[in-house]
Image (cartoon, rainbow, N blue to C red):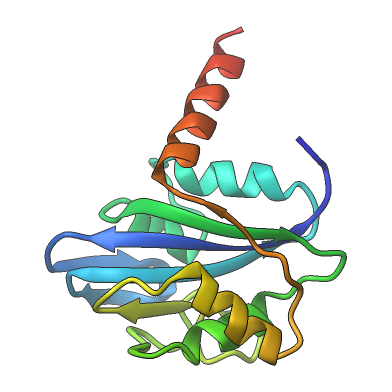
Length: 162
């Protein structure tokens, strides 16, 4: 895979209520539903994505704490010469039904309100693309659904086994 950087959005689903300890943010309540977490990698985008797809004993990023309870159901990504995570976060926040579960989640290194957004119903990638385009963001945004994510995780396991 490419060593290029880019921007991504993890689509997560939480089946029931959880109280999750999230590093310096403390104990946070997460309700069942759909979440979108926006991030970036200055280089090696796919390595960053793979890191989020696997559960870790010692969480590093805010999203790693939530990932211990939430399943990844999709991924939107784009190779971008400059990080666009703040623009993507604005686009996600502008989608109908968007709610902020916790200010500053995933946004400790920028001025964004949050990089984690809650939805009762999962938004469509086409609607996200339209909102992103209105803000001047890069299009196309690639979409991986559960099947592509499962294939990517299997490929990663096979490579590690060699």
